[in-house]
Length: 72
Image (tube, rainbow, N blue to C red):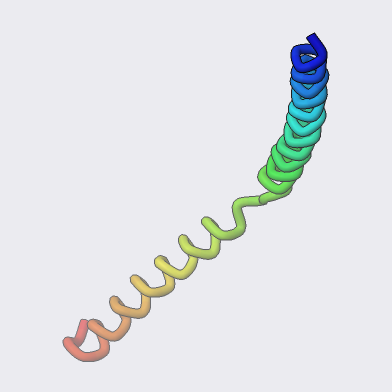
């Protein structure tokens, strides 16, 4: 019976360690999710605006060069 009691104590300790580890990991992931949501909320879309502006400037420049080389 001593071996069974010892085994049960070790299993209880293992279960407690797993719960503690799980709680810590869950808290860590929740913190990461919260940080990611703050980053997404803080984004203003400036990257998309910059890309659109660059594309428009590129198209304008190509048109102007074509007009210069080929005439109006």
